[in-house]
Length: 390
Image 1 (tube, one colour):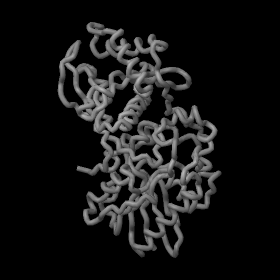
Image 2 (cartoon, one colour; image 1 turned 180 degrees about the vertical axis):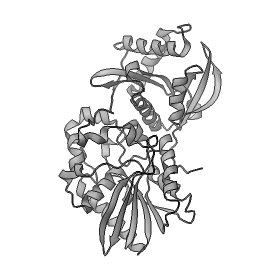
Image 3 (cartoon, rainbow, N blue to C red; image 1 turned 90 degrees about the horizontal axis):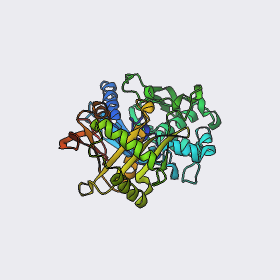
Image 4 (cartoon, rainbow, N blue to C red; image 1 turned 60 degrees about the horizontal axis):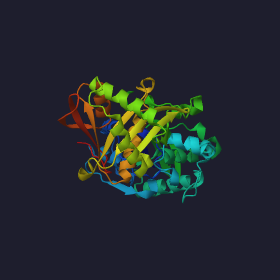
């Protein structure tokens, strides 16, 4: 009998930013890096004969962490352990999918069929792929113990298949937290589930699920509670909204409106939006606009950086883990433009904003002079990569 520890990858950008990932090659988040450290500790004293992983960065980063205490192991990567491909849904906000493709999205958790033609858009094909690769891996290590890192939907499909749960009853199998561990036994060409979705190595402050509610849908929660939608903000039609958000941000940063020139900022924003509507967007929830985001593709271009000119959330929606999705939109836009960093300015006195950005992976580069006082130049590295524990 071969023992297989089947592990979901750590929190990645799509999990944090509430965007469909599929086979989009996203990075681990700052929280995901803390999760893999906890996972490495969990496996410190568990003997392992081999380590396998999906070839996507978020999975390989998770697998690589396990080698901290198992340096003799190499993580073998294969695309057969990838997440289900989601085609045109990939890197799209879940809120936009819920609004624009509600019927397909509502059926997706039950049928495992995405709302477009892909090479793999059905529950059965995901199950077959996962089952076959795990059995082949097990055959290489008879009576051994193997760790395998894969993805949430792929693991859930495999577990339901082994447990004899049909696709229309998929809700009987709960979602697994990031880095959740399941134990399978492989023998004589068959798989058996010993236990699944164990995240005991995570504290509440390192668990993704402890901060989210979408996965509680089957228990009466709402899949839309954590999601927002994005639409282009158009000028001059939305000038009043734009000025309200910019004025509020300026006052929070400087304490006064000295140096604030709305006509100049409106003109620049309108030019960027005309070049690319994704550079100036409004974020809404339940039909109400709750924030805006303005991106500048020119500033920082020489350093392969994209610039956030304005990021604003209405006060009643702050501290509800929704503003992070504005940052996710910025990452999506600038990565498509082949930028490797995102930068912005924050007032030295705005400790709440500084804490938010640092918690989510930004670093302070240097202090720079601002109109109303010194500003921190902050930087987020969005280079696609496999991350390793220090």
